[in-house]
Each structure stands twice: as structure tokens, then as C-alpha cells.
Length: 393
Ligand SMILES: Cc1cc2nc3c(=O)[nH]c(=O)nc-3n(C[C@H](O)[C@H](O)[C@H](O)COP(=O)(O)OP(=O)(O)OC[C@H]3O[C@@H](n4cnc5c(N)ncnc54)[C@H](O)[C@@H]3O)c2cc1C
Image 1 (cartoon, rainbow, N blue to C red):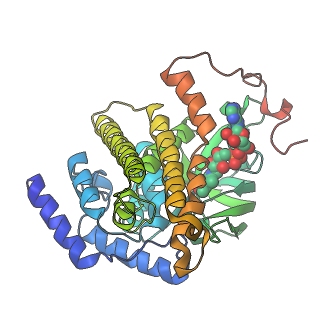
Image 2 (image 1 turned 60 degrees about the vertical axis):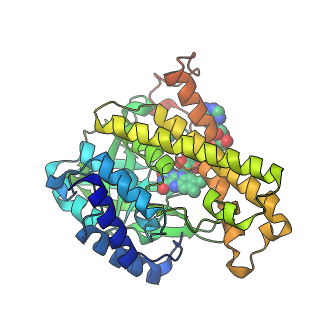
Image 3 (image 1 turned 180 degrees about the vertical axis):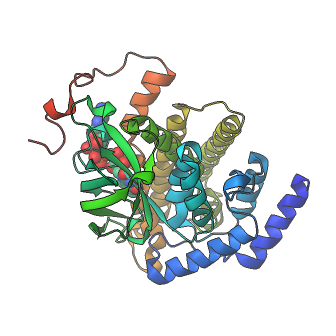
């Protein structure tokens, strides 16, 4: 099928099946059921995992089809938020690093929305410095036992599975003693507590692991090689955040260019100027993302340039929110009339933190894109057990 025909069919499927109503960030139990039913339809129609390997449940098509569908979907708002971590980070990590058994077990249900995933990296004492994490996995006869705490875990209150980063060796430097696992979020000993943020919703959670058993076959990659696995996930995370995987379009977003151009006085030259800047920055980022996606598909590793895309999006998101605030005036803080504008503005700073802060993105770009001298790392060769790190005394 040629691309035009593919695009036409995608469009007509969306017209028939996608709600033009808005995506719920924190959909609640009813919303999750609706989202799951939508994902099943999307998968059965061939529009979930468009460029993922056919062998593991994807469509085995190219970036051109992936992009064509995303462009058509921009006019709709798809209820895919709860799947964004699985589709953007956990699934791609398993495609790259999972065992055949893990891929066969997990990828198809993930793509069909039957199972929801979360990413369990950050801890109270380990965010930017995630390699300082303290959640321990101890080997047993038939697998591993995990104890510790994670925090800021998006969508975990709805999740069936998590991609978990743990410490498996304290006698080696912090980056060298980590291991990654797939963890069953319904296993005994897993406690999930939602955390409410300033939008009034619970986007993320804190998670407690109390002697949680993980079977040996759930190890991702090799024991103590978790840092390189985490880098793979973080790369996918930055690319997926900047390209808006699972975000389901901007049509209904009250701070997006398309919405603002129809709701504000574009005759005012100052407003026009700012809208032009918003348009140019959005378009430049979309093209940059497109290029990174094409290069990835062609086997060219985007590396730290993914951090540049993520930083650009975080800054664009703040620019959008500032512009919308100045155009709306006092209404920007009104939570009346469903509070959508106020909610979008309050959510904007989250992008400067989640997936790595702007400062950390700049450090990565300085080190690895511009080859500037790296930050001093005094703890690089010190065994983890000898460090005073995070919440340890
Ligand atoms: C909306 C949202 C969703 C999230 N979802 C998830 C998730 O699903 N899973 C998950 O594991 N985590 C998640 N996180 C956590 C996120 O990855 C961390 O918040 C982030 O890495 C920052 O860590 P921290 O909050 O501990 O801040 P800290 O690391 O304590 O940083 C505090 C401040 O110090 C600055 N700083 C720290 N180190 C340096 C340095 N070396 N150089 C310069 N400045 C520095 C930071 O930029 C920041 O301004 C989410 C966060 C948000 C906001």
C-alpha cells in the first residue's frame, strides 16, 4: 500500500473510532477501561506498534507510516496517556534488550493496551543522580528479593508491570552494581501510593517494595549491567517525551498553537509575533524529532541529541504556558469551566523535571555533544558501600 493510501485509511479509521474529546491525564478506573478498549481497537486495526518488529506483535512498517499516522492523529485526542510509559520507554527497552521469552510474554499485551507499564528508577535520594539508588535486589535460589522505595513513578497506580532498577552489588562503584528487572506490580509486598501534584491530579506515585519476589527470568540484560540498560531506557524516554509518544495529539490542548490561533486576537502585532515564534519553535522541534527518528531507524544512534530534543520541548512548554497566561490574563488561574487552561499551565513545569531536568540535559549536551570538559565525579571509583549518598547516613 502506498503512503497516501495508508494515510487515507488511517484517517478514515480515526474518523470512525477516535473520540475528539480530550485525553484524561489521570483517567481513574472508568477512564482506564475506556482507554484499554480504545487501545485494543487501535491494535486490531494495525495502528499500535506501527514500526515495532512484526515478530513481537508490531506491524513491522517504517517510520514513514508511523509519522503518517501521528500526523493524522494530531486532529484527534486519543486516550493513550496511561500507555505512554510502556509505549515510549519500557516496550522499546524490551525490544532492544529483552530475552525472547520476555518479548513473547510482554510486547503484544503492551501494544494492545491489555497491560499498563511504569518505570521505576527515581528514589527519594536518587533523581538526577539515579545511579545513587538504594533499592536492593538480593539473589535467592529461584530469583531475587527486592526491598526499597521508589518515587515520582508515573501511572503506577494503574500499572500491571514495571521496569525496575535496583542495586545488586554494593562493593563496586555506584554505576557498576545495578541490575534491571521486570516486576509484577500486583506481587505481594508492592504498595503504591498516589501523590497529588499542583494540577490537583495524581500523575505519579510513591512505591514501597517489601521483600518482593522476582523470578530469575525477569532479569533484563546481565546482572550488574543495569546502568547500560537504564541508559537505553533514558534515551527512549527523552526521544518519546520530545516526540509526544502516547500524548494523542494537540488538538484539544488549550496552550497549543492551533488552539491559541483560533482563540486570541491575531490582529494584535505583538500577539502575532509571539504566535509566530511559537509556531516556528514547534515546527523546528517536530522536524528535529523526525530526523532523529529516521536516523534511529537507519541504525544511527541519536545519543545525547535526544537530550537536546527533550530540553527544547521543556523550554517550548514553558514558553507556551507563559504566552497562554499573558493572553488569558486573570482567567489563566481560574479552575472554573473545567479548569483546563489552568491545568495545562500548571502542568508545564513538569516537563523541565520528568525524564531528567533541564540542568542535567545541558550537562549531557555539554559533555557528549559539545565535548566540553565533564563535571568532576569524585565518587566514580569509590565502592557504593563507602559513599555517603542520597538518604544514607
Ligand atoms: C511529571 C514527572 C513524572 C515523572 N515520572 C517518573 C517516572 O515515571 N519514573 C521515574 O523513575 N521517575 C520519574 N520522575 C522523576 C524525575 O526523573 C526526577 O524528578 C528528575 O530526574 C529529577 O530528580 P529529583 O526530583 O530527585 O531532583 P534532584 O536530582 O534532587 O535535583 C534538584 C535540582 O538540582 C539540580 N541538579 C541536580 N544535579 C545537578 C547537576 N549535576 N548539575 C546541575 N544541576 C543539578 C536539578 O536540575 C534540580 O534543579 C518524574 C518526574 C516528574 C516531574
